[in-house]
Image 1 (cartoon, rainbow, N blue to C red):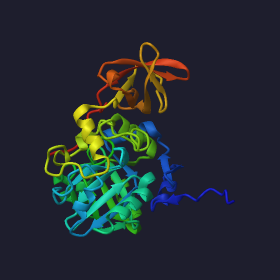
Image 2: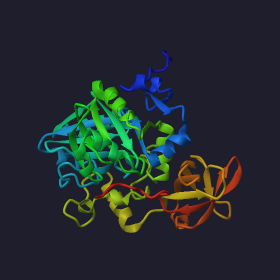
Image 3: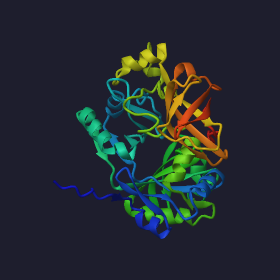
Image 4: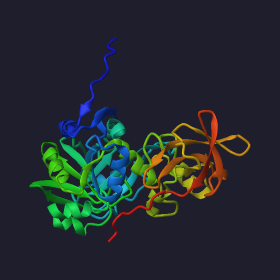
Length: 374
């Protein structure tokens, strides 16, 4: 039997990461930069105060084309795709027969096609899912010839407007085809940090040149996966496989806001996606557990997997993400707790190395989201 580990894939920016002194780690089958020499804390603060450039080329980009693409995709997601305006993107979820989340994704309407961005770890599974269910109705194409860069932070708009002035007019979740450094790119005003910013889909062979142009701007620094994680946690954003998975529904994951009105009970296109009956029932009747924010009342970070107990010591939940929130200067976490204990302000304990650490149920985001809405 061959026990040799599978070789890791590399993004088109691999050599640039090495040149910049990145510490590379395995992530979702890729060698990815977890941090650069400045370190996670400074990278986090830089993104919150200026602009950070992230390599997210490990994510999957998929194009659906054909007149029936939007109608077909609605059979897999509880979201309004048919009425998604051109040059707009929307957050969506693939669900399974029990209402669990197979992955979360972005769906953009490019006019004659839909562009999907899916999580790296779920990329092959998502592609197979799309091909199995949709290939008879529309063309499903993985865009493996494209890289993805994220430019995030309060000065991201100023930086990108230098290269393409029209991007300044875009608002949160709008998309456009934009010429950047002489190359046609597909740009969305969105991201995964809670800050204003853009995600830029660029052909692989132009990715490094574009990254260098962006990094040459005085406001921009390279940011690794470590700060990407701490930034999204402060912004109250879920990480697939941690804060939601195939065993948690959108209602349990506190993602009911993503379930489009037109797909809800009594509406024009109610249901019609995997697990719809369960999800619609939960929307009406409630759930036994919910994802909540948790603020540890100690300096000690509370990590994923820690049990959450009530005042009697009974287990009422589990932490799914936790770490240090550099912007707020203290630890933050998210997890699932029984609905009876999910009220904001409820005091519970997380068990860390056998000892109880008091945590308070809190609203997310922990840091105000600063998306540009015009």
